[in-house]
Length: 269
Image 1 (cartoon, rainbow, N blue to C red):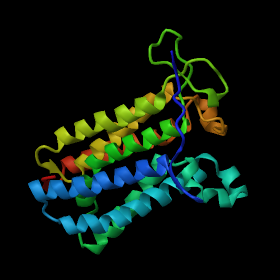
Image 2 (cartoon, rainbow, N blue to C red):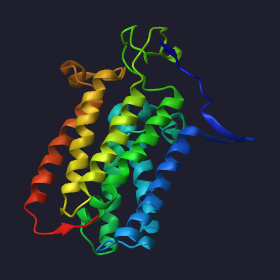
Image 3 (cartoon, rainbow, N blue to C red):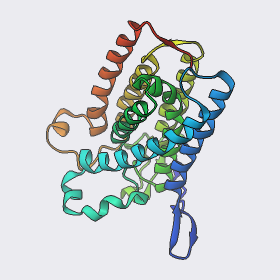
């Protein structure tokens, strides 16, 4: 078995100013979208978006990810704690971001940006969907560096079983952060890259992303240590909060994909 390689969560320090690896991972995700989006428009073109618009949307999208992700975590996962300690909400550098909350924040950002440029919501969401998995991969690597969100106990014979001392146990666990970085990041990115290699009906790419992420997250939650603060109906069903929130995402993705299949509009991504 492997020992978790303790990594200082602070990447750089300038006196009282500290740059955390968790923030660096988010920055890398934003930069990947910015330059990847511009490259794709420059190479393949787009019926609505221009390279300049990618600069503008990044501001909307970054706010949606950060505000939605943090508020989603605080309200969806630990509302009692954060309502009692509201100042803790701003401590994003300590981790604690919800993908589902971030997704809702991005939905709002896409809606507002689409209105600004007088376009359709799915024209924007279909374009950004293939970039999101790589951003998720960076986020999961940030979780690993922080030594958080470790997995359930694994077999002692598992070659990559890892001991996370911060978990309070010296038994090997699944490095579920890396599982998610690979499945939700690399694999889903390749699926969407292949899917968008030819024109698709409006909304279908967004639907494939939602289905793919929801399924990957639902399955991989079986390898992840359940949240200690999961209570009530979620805990009684045996599902984790991540699975509970992923299920409606899968259903919504199926509905959007079906609706898109009936659309007369095809988009080249």
